[in-house]
Structure formats: structure tokens, C-alpha cells
Amino acid sequence: MEDLIKRAARDLAAASHAIALTGAGISTESGIPDFRGPDGLWTKHPEAERQAYEAYDQLVRDPKRHWERSLEPDSFYRIFEEIGRLDPNRGHAALAELEQMGILKAVLTQNVDGLHQKAGSRNVLEYHGGVAKLRCMSCGARFPKSEFDLDRLKAEDRLPPRCPKCHGVLKGDGVYFGESIPSDVAEASVEEALACDLMLICGTSAVVYPFAELPRIARNKRAYSRRWGGLGPPADPVPTNVTINDVNAAPTPQTQERTSSYFIQGQTGDILPRIAAEVRKLRGRQGETA
Image (tube, rainbow, N blue to C red; front, side):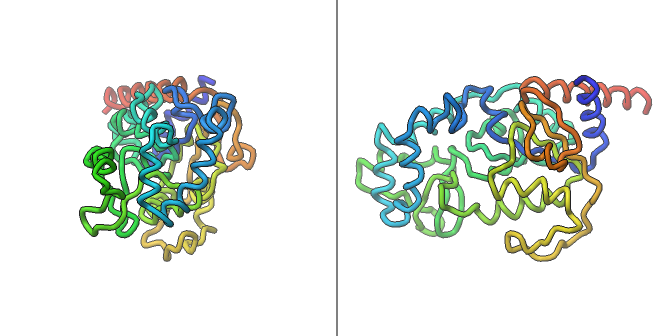
């Protein structure tokens, strides 16, 4: 284990464009349950899962009624409000530190909790959206949820909330079941996968598509067709020698398919701070010999 942590630190220190992919496993250590495990959100709240599957169709058909229901005390949206009040853990902090060192260029996350930003990460692509924002269904603009008094709009019969730019209907930024990944995030994520020479997979099994395609894009850049996602040919040459490190509590398909270069088994809140500490040591030695 220690040798793998030191290897990961050396690889990060040598990388010119390192990125991280994160999933539920990095946030469970902040007290956020997964969805379908023994203590999962859907396991404990099966009615909330049904509501989640119906939400997008209802939003499209009747946005006013959708918003009225989402603001009711028993709505599954209230669960996500609680998630937004939690704090980041040592894994989030380690990634933020690696970015502050200039090593990590971006975090691409499946999580909607905003904990990477709370920990100090600045370049975060929220692939499935974020609980702290609203997004316009017409122009795609995003706004902090805190700028809208939703309960007051409901009391004044002024739902749904409207976009300040184009007056389109606003929705929660989280990507609903049946909704496409916003094109700006999807395209930026593919660009990062193509640009990286190191990808750090943290707390995600990467089995939910299209997010799960990103490690495979990074690994197979020469064979990758930019037609995926509707993108054109690459504007610039892309690095083809890529190191993919998989930090997870259990082996993932990336490990089994040998998409990842090597696998470090453990909790991200334990492993990532140890990797960051080794990077600091390497930086210190480099400074002494400069």
C-alpha cells in the first residue's frame, strides 16, 4: 500500500495535466448516504425514488405543479437540501490542496453536494449538476439557488421561478432521470479527458454512463471518435501516454478491464491525504535541490 501511495504521488508530481473523477464514495465519509445501499436514500425512502423517476416528465408537462410539489415538506427535494448543509472531509480537502499546488487542473464529479467547492476546489465540473444552483431550461444559464426565495414565490402564486436572462423556466441544476447531461458540462468533461496525462479516479465505480465513458476516452484517445457527444475533431494534439489511478474501497470495472494503471484499495478520506502529503515531500526535496 505505501509503495502504491508513493508511486501515485510521483506520478502526480510529474504530470502536466492531472484531473480527478469523483463519485459517491468520496462523499459517504461526510455522512452522505449512497442511493441503493443498506442505508441508501432510495432504500430508506422508496417513495422518494418513485418521485425522482417521475420528476422530469412532470416538470416538462406542468412546471408550476412540479415546483409546488418540490417545495412541500415531504418532497424528496428536501433530502437534497439537507445534503447541501454537510461539510467536506479529508478526501475533498486533499484534492483541493493538489489543485492549490498547481498539480490538479480539474475535478469532474458525479456528486451534486457541492463539497468540492466547500473544500476549496475551484475548477469543478458537476457532471450531474449541483444542489446549490438553479438552471434555465431554455438558455442553460445557472444561478445560485440562494438568490431565489422559493417559498415566497410559492406563497405569492408566482411559481415556477423564471430566468432573469430569458424568462425561461428554472429547474434544479441536478440532472433528473430522463434528462440529458447539459452539453456545456459534457463537452468540457470530454475535453479534460482528452487533455489529461493523469486521471485520478476517486470513490466511483464509473459504471453510470455517460460519465463512465471518461476513463475509457482518456485511455483510448487515438481510437476515440470525437463524434461521441456531437463534438468535432480535436483542435490540438492530445497526450496519449496516460496514467489512470483508481482509489476505491473495492475493485471497479476500471480495474478489471485494465483501464486503470493501478488500483489503491481504501477509503478516499484516508488515501488521498496520504498521497497529498507525499507530493508535498517531493516538492520539498525538489526545492532543496533547485
